[in-house]
Length: 180
Image (cartoon, rainbow, N blue to C red; front, side):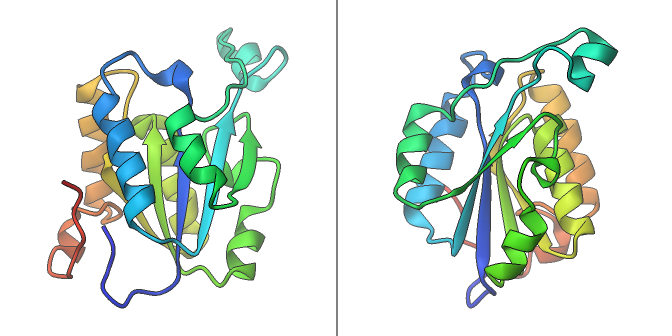
């Protein structure tokens, strides 16, 4: 999803192997296609982990090791010199770097978000991006959920309801570049 003649754009990619359960091959292909076909003015690579002592561990007893981005996606991103943000919460806006300052420095006005989990990290990042004053769009074809398609669809419905996906009713009349 890109608007013809749009403002400067930025892409946030949040994609670690540990959240995939073998059914997300299309989303990997779609993210690679998007990153190869669309030139963004800036890129952010989000890396999530929840180690011992984090709030995840303390409140839920759940931990998750730091993992690199999936190799196919990481290879494409490497050539684009992304800002790499490590986070221990859902939103990349609450990671180890000041994303809002980075976006303002790059004169970014519109943020596109891709990755997993649609109902968790992608959702939180989208809300924080919008709340920080950026036009925000979750690229639906480039998201998945480790909790299954039902919860992903519910998250997409919520995001569409506030018009922050590439298929939201508010932007349906604009010229879009769709993924095949």
